[in-house]
Length: 247
Image (cartoon, rainbow, N blue to C red; front, side, top):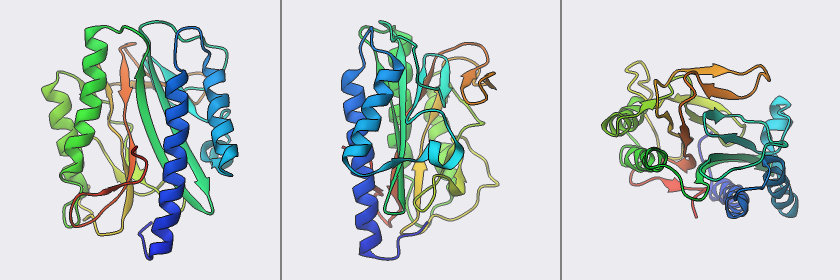
């Protein structure tokens, strides 16, 4: 969607803050011994408190409130009985809707003391997002975002999972344009003021190839290497974008 009024921006800010609150409470609860199902219940409680709804089950029938992915699981992990362990990387991905407006964000949480490689991977995902913000401005093209992300990821010695990308959001959970995390010269759409998108580097310590699991939801790295995910919903302006889901 594109912002057409202050009222629309206000409503997007509201749902963005709710998504942020859910991620913050879930992140604070991540520790060895907690289950992904318990983290999911925290998300459900936050959304209910703010009269918001989780978008994945409502739109796609996803069997959970949040997507919670661990270690080699890149995205769309189904919350349940899995117990979090010391050294894990836990990806928390929340998409929610209120009053017809959607916001989407994700973080990767380190559990206790993690390996140097795991720490570097998480930092790389976050830094590649920040670098992409510098080119996410009106007048630039979509492919410039992917080029910026991929440059940083490769500099760090990691790989983008090319099948997974950012997207338009706002009136629905997924909208045009697609926002790849690599340089795809075909993505020539110009960013314009008011456009609402996600930027979400999803990267792997290994080859970057991914596989859909038998549950038909979870996507893992094909070589079982660690994955990291960092995402925010933003509004394009002529200057730095507005971050709707940032603290």
